[in-house]
Structure formats: structure tokens, C-alpha cells
Length: 136
Image (cartoon, rainbow, N blue to C red):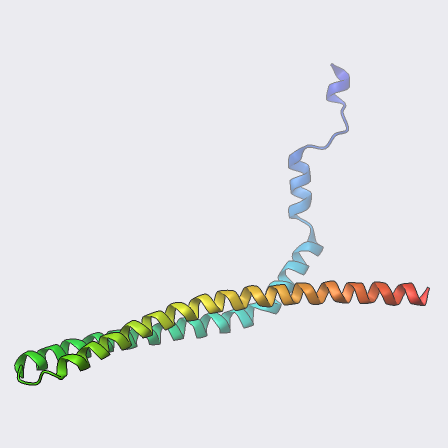
């Protein structure tokens, strides 16, 4: 029984404590975060602004559609006016579709950018490896 209590195996708590207090890792993580933070914040602001503007446009289109329907009811002798209301609703639908496409495109562009960076790092590593082999 004494051999069990004199074990040199470190506990999980000690390993976790050492990992969490690693100053080099903390400095690197903070540096990387600070490097990308301004770009991500600007991108988020622009996306949020675009989404807000599209929501405002949708609201204005809704208000205009209501006004046009009221005018149409008031002047029922103008039959071609109904076609204009339908066109307006189609435009509203297209704005919604474009908003969705914009969001999807942004996600795909971000993914593509990550893949390009990964490929560039891989190629640079291969180039560095080839250069060090040729130098040796």
C-alpha cells in the first residue's frame, strides 16, 4: 500500500494547472487575437450595416406596397396599377433573395479564404523544405 501512495504519476489537476498557466501560450493567443480582431470587427460592422440597410429597404417596400394598395382601392378604374403592385412585390422578393445570397456568399468566401491560406502555407513549407534540401 505504501508504494501506491508514493507514486510519481502527476494528477490531472496538476497537468491542467500547468497548461492553463503557460505564459507563452497566453501571449501567443493574445497576439493572434489582437492581429485579427480589427479586421473581423470591421467585417462584422459592414455585414451588420448591410443587413440593417436591407431590413430598412424591406420595411420601406412594405410601406410603399400598403400605400399602393390603398391607392389602387381608391382608384379602382386603373387596372394596370395592379401590375405595378405585383412588380413591386417581385422586387421586394428579389431583395430578400439577394440578402440571403449575400450571407451565403460571405460564408463561402470566408471558407475559401481559409483554404487558400492553408494551401499557401503548405506550398511555402514544401518550398522551404526543397530549398533546405538543395542547400545541404
